[in-house]
Length: 453
Image (cartoon, rainbow, N blue to C red):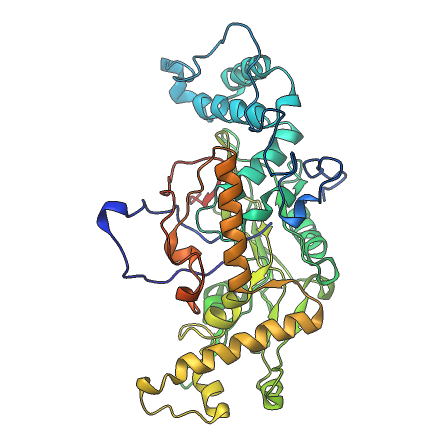
């Protein structure tokens, strides 16, 4: 989502590498026909969505307290350290066999009941030699998508990575099918207000056959329209897509909270198809304040499911350019960024005026006081509407719990400090006062910035 902001507190010796571009997959799957199940929870333990790791009671995995299973005996067709040997034909392969083999090994380490690792690696490498790429099993796809979330350095909500619902839609590639299942994604994720983390994985890129793309940055976003006075009606972040949709024939009403249509482009150079979102796909919350009745008259609202749709899910060298995913909002993403940023809805001066604050000087901290009240309204409204939302203090504590669980399993937790620390009262949260494992932009599986056609 949108928690990026500048930080001056750095030490060059400890500065982490830059994170991959794109948004935070703070998102958490129903298939066209079948549902890839969540990873099983051991008897007597809470479900994965509770934030506990399925496995032993202390969050570890496997009978020896680790998540590493012994590899089966036998000769390795590929050297474990070096990966597949280079050869002249490798340049013709669409999928890197080294990345494929690395992922299969990781999958079998973390899923020791998955079968014969070496046999699967041989099959994958043979398929890459014959076709240029390979096809994941449903279990590999589901675990790979969850690992992509676990590896998301900009996401504070990774404690719940095991609960990600993975919708296996790889057999779908037409614009009509992608739009229909994207709408179903929103219904599944909204879940009557109890937001589910969901990813819908459509057809991958294949040699000579790039897959279709969703043009929108998010499945739900509000349009922005320039006003005659130089200001904006709606969300300036949605202005470019709104203009493109109008060129394609979309009839807009130029309202403040007007949901953009979904644009899907099947092939490079083709005009995208556009689709109005059905009413039952967009769960919205009208914003009110617990102490200020006038707040309701501001007419503010926000949608409940933040579903990122312009990033590529990359697993073992296979790229899925259409894989929308969502989690649930942290309140500051709406109250401190979407509604408060000067290049978004820019509501701070309006709220400050209604509060009667002295806005004559920055030293009165009027922006800070208005920002807090705006965030109070967001959290209160979502709670009253029965829609899942997290506050930044609770989510910070949960992120440290995630780090502790991963450490017990012998795994690092790469994190981008400037995204993890919330934009409101950052110094009051425990995630502020520490360093994190450095970000590795090459870490896979991952949600990565989508490359152009």
